[in-house]
Image 1: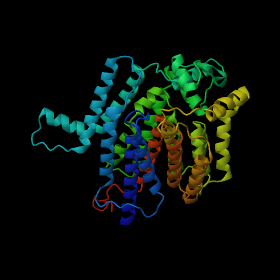
Image 2: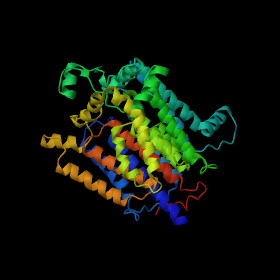
Image 3: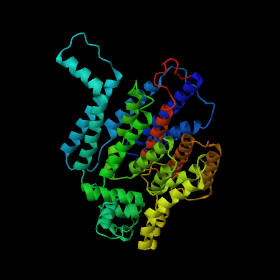
Image 4: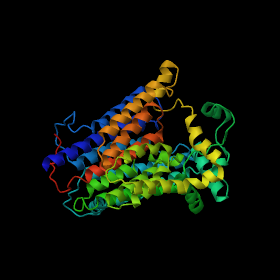
Length: 469
């Protein structure tokens, strides 16, 4: 029993180290390629994720550390990176930037209360205030996180990025009864920037390259609240709620590990940048978190309806399909339910314009020209050898070999399946195309894996018994 709990905390430590290395790799300059050191940090993070597939760990830590301390140390790094590097880049004034920095500083100060414990001999005003803040720091941090998210949208109402304009235009098309996959959108770039990004000075964008769950969620958000990004704020806090639901019974007496994990999610570095720019990873994360929660709660068919929604969030999420098919509790009815759910969302747009849908969803992605700001070895290859990594034998051979090995090694449980997909996804991003939202999505899945590890650890287990080594 003790060995099992030590093993679980060791796994948590590996995930925490991988998480920190990946954050250090992509958060420092919003995942833009600047120095090859970033790539090696990401690569080391990927190695620690890969090691989780070995029953016997290659590295044994010779120090005593509880799950709670692991999460505090991870949170300290994460909050530091969040404070220094996170934030919107299209805020409408310098004062807006200053106000968000003040809020981030307040959040950092509140998190520091997890590192100390007050023991005042007198009960003055200051001591009462500090004890109140320490007791309620988690809820204040949740409120501050929500305020920062809302002010990011308020201070950056029209970010200058094609993702926002396409999502916003697609939502408006649906509201007006038009097919978003046949619509034309105008990017907020100069002709020179469009030529650099798309190979043409024409800033028209004819491609709505997002799937239908994302379309429905952003359309509902724009219709109800006037901005498509409220759907992403709801997604962030929805994931936090699911972490609470997964851990509340396990951490009744000591809630701090659960709180720390939720805060890792709410204050994930570049989270507000990703929110401002309107990337869809938080929505995909919410749907998958819900799928895992329902599956672990014993529901037979609801999880697979949700999985169908998940497959309709983003094309990269289809990587999950061959691994989920390996799950021991699967049957043809569950597979059929996921497929039907996906088709119910997709078929109306196929009937509306199959050629437009095919071109936007598949052909546009296949022909996309990898940008030089991508944080990947592809960029490094271009800088040193003046050529991008194409879909050649070496690239496809490496990913195919990794996929076969991971599929063979993967156990038939949810945690092992998620680990396998994260390793494969990370390899794809770091080799071929790595943007800020891609690595942000990887971080969301790592936090889910950390949640599943915490479910195996009894919160009342003594620190010295939960040591690593």
